[in-house]
Image (cartoon, rainbow, N blue to C red; front, top):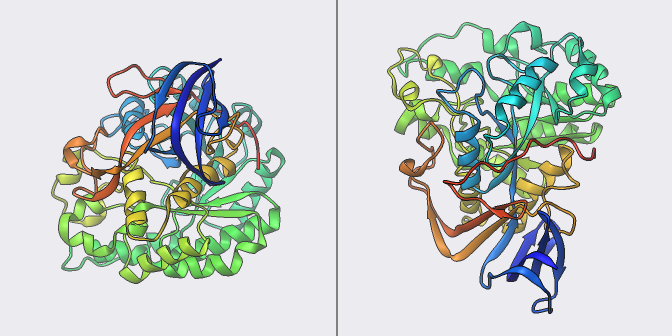
Length: 442
């Protein structure tokens, strides 16, 4: 007997589209039945007219816990994620302390237990030296994060030698190395303030050539070491041109974000501080190039880079734009942002399921349980009503940031329910999330 039977849905995932009755046992998808097949279940729900997608897997999220919990914490960030259709997220290590040691990771996991509304995996920042790698790896972080610029020297991989040596050290573990591309020399070069109080200086310190150079260095380092590499946050035309030419040299993947696909630097003229993030918003030609790259299949996954700050921090006056805290919230509006791309004709629902669930789960070692609507996979489900409508509003946000860069965006479809391992997630119910570990490496 099944625990739950969902009758009459239209299922969409990376493997295709079909009408089927979906059954669940012990939090797992048990079988996909031909519609109206006789079956016994403890609970049966009629979902005719609804579309089921796999829960989104967001592999780039800053939950700010510990150390910056006035900005976000495990409870608030994962609740926002659940309301936005994200059922699994991977937490970045850039908290306080930065997660670099096994002890840091143990303490962070302890803080998270019992407070997360969705499933959460953890990522560790790779120091330039290789101390305690065995101990950290034993805890199964889903990746090691490597930064080429903008971080303290102890883990700043700002030379090819540092990059190659760290990838060599990780190679025996068959662990995914995630690299944030950049050019430390460009970012640290003096910039002159302009009439836009530092906005031009910020853009000049983060030009597309810095991203492109970082991408090239990351791919070449991966090719020379044989280590699996994932490149963070592509958002420029030049970066994509570089990626297209080099990506076949190694086992590499790349991500982009909804903001890179939906926003341009014109947004700075509206609510400048609230759109400050790194990498910065680009020109329209860059945004268009990113959309073209998604359509071409150059982009492997879309992630949010959810990086909230307290509203007061963003709203404060700063003489220099470079001093504005960098980052914007994104998990609660992830699905809506993707549906806006569907509305515009850039994607379809199968693309969303592939880029935002299947590919990230596969690449980050969660592909045996997450990202597909198939027997044996976790019953992480999004039930969408094609007759509904979703409007992103600041007042609805549950992140501590209490705003969204997509305020006022309206898209077809409404999210009726979110299931995590077979249980409907409710805003006011106890947290149901688990800490996820690597289950397969691909």
